[in-house]
Length: 144
Image 1: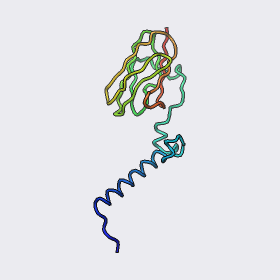
Image 2 (image 1 turned 60 degrees about the vertical axis):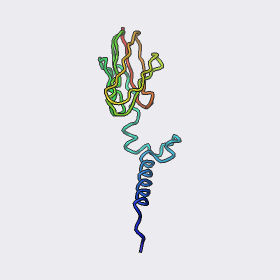
Image 3 (image 1 turned 45 degrees about the vertical axis):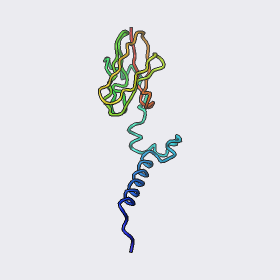
Image 4 (image 1 turned 120 degrees about the horizontal axis):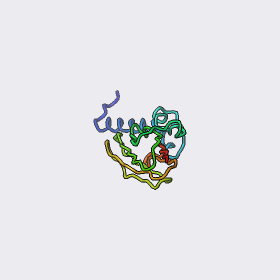
């Protein structure tokens, strides 16, 4: 007859099981090494980098970008030179806005409703991403 397990033993088993489930959801330990073992997992498909869309096809004339569900919305915007663009974090996760083409680096936008603004002075196409989650991409097309 098996011996009953103590609460501590049950807690240890439950914790170990949850850790194993977490590793499986992320593709296991090899995920950290850059392997794609978990690439077909639904969580990875949801957070995969969006397909590159030419700014002229998807550009929206608005100076506001929302950060939500690990993406910039809209992903591509078109504004006139001198426009102040504002990114507002609606995720509970922290995000940032970084571009090497236009010297731009926001502070960490932790929590919801934190915002960052930047004025684009010169015409051009500027690509940016989240400094914390590099798979998040966006584009600002600035016209004369």
